[in-house]
Image (cartoon, rainbow, N blue to C red):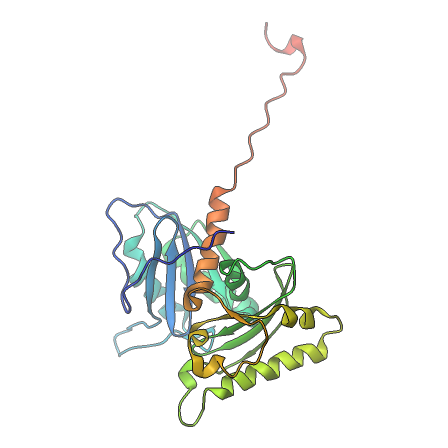
Length: 275
């Protein structure tokens, strides 16, 4: 599988959209700290703080992996992406989602994304998107450790689907003198141990033996990763953008999939042909 390589984004602002370039497909990662968007044929077009400005100062519409302000999220998306989409284009959107937020998150996200007038919205678990970006063999059990800014998830994928998951509302932005980095590693160890205890199969153990994937901004922090004592653990390329790149791979696959050819019409009996 080809791993997409992100186009360099300027921190804090979006890349300019080239004149005349149409965008019919967008991968979107609405993180608690940053929002990222990837356009097929263009690359990473957005990597900015997840913040909106309702007129009374800055507001943060996504917190701890939950969309707490749907209207604010819609305003943010309209401000950041609305003018970058050609007026008469209705994009297909693939949206990453935290594994354990379920229907509530997906419903809120779909409602917010409607501001972009999409022709369709598909959600994908962020852990699956990370595994796709890493080119992981999804035919075998895979453990994904997603170390985010406000949320840490431990997810077991089996045949590419979520088999088990744990999360804690603790992320890299919480690390300070009162909350040392080792606390995140300890939380990951506790969640993994819980999976092992409750798994009536060998799937979790098999995934650990293969080595987990490390993703999220926390995967770039040695003060966290050095406390993760997992043999064979590997950090995915550009771990902070892995989720949106994996969603983009799904977009590319959907666009390159050949459309079924129409079946030829049955000519019927010779006497019905009019000859």
